[in-house]
Image (cartoon, rainbow, N blue to C red; front, side, top):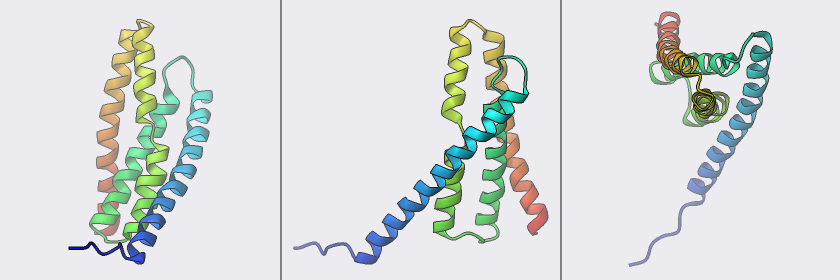
Length: 140
């Protein structure tokens, strides 16, 4: 038994999806850097407000876009790869959140570390819900 080689269309589609994710990630990472830095520069103290703001915005956007994609059927698979996986995946900063929380723990600032975790988790879930609810209200 021989295996047929992959069809050219499948390969082109996979490469196109990878390029869309990469382009979205590039733009999302730059946006994260700009937004996080701007917010952090406007806020006092050592609490990572910039990361917090980016995660809130990103979670809201994921909720909104997910609702539009699932309920409204408004995004193709390629558009979801670009926007959700690439752009928003590059924009949100959960790994940075983990590192900043660990730095607070390492510095023995347990109350601020706990506040950071509680605030991020609560806000993330709330923002995803709010994004979905906003799109439901607009597109029903």
